[in-house]
Length: 83
Image 1 (tube, rainbow, N blue to C red):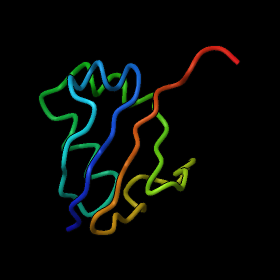
Image 2 (cartoon, rainbow, N blue to C red):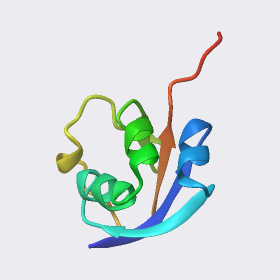
Image 3 (cartoon, helix red, strand yellow):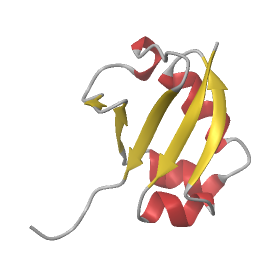
Image 4 (spheres, rainbow, N blue to C red):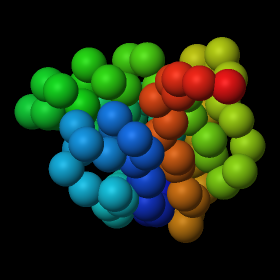
């Protein structure tokens, strides 16, 4: 089980009610389950988000296969408009 911090951006930050928070989870799938528990609006937003784990985009990899190391930072990025 790793400990780290999750940072929320834009609509994810609004839905979470905080810019960042600590976590403990073994993989990204477990982290997503934990942070969205009893947070329906955040769960709705997170379904459309992309994730960056210590600077590396997760892309289309299954979240349960993205192992989290101790001290990791996970960025939660909703889709952005504009260009």
